[in-house]
Image (cartoon, rainbow, N blue to C red):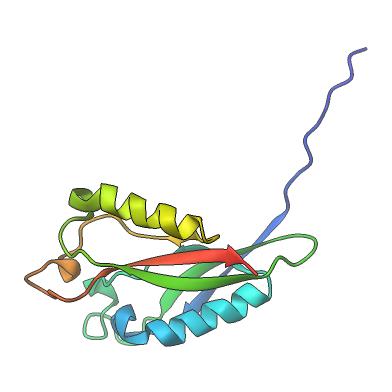
Length: 144
């Protein structure tokens, strides 16, 4: 009879929080960051959060729609984390700036930060014509 090794199962709990940010997230980044850090201290990690503006989530299009954030937490001891939002200083299609983005993310990784969420698809809200001074937000996470 052959003995088989079975890998331990990773037990993860998920939850969706709807944050009361019904305008462009950029206008609420400090509030958003405070809320995410509160979850982070409780061991909840961001699995998905969209910090870019989508017209479908604008107050005019859907009044009262809150910003959804998917959180996850491993079973067992709580691993607290903290969050930071880094604004990448380019407003064109991110594809044109991937080398610059990767270099900056490598610098932040040396300080212990890892990417929790970034949207690299092109959004008209981040085009130079629409909002020339609005950089691309990247949500970063590191262990406390």
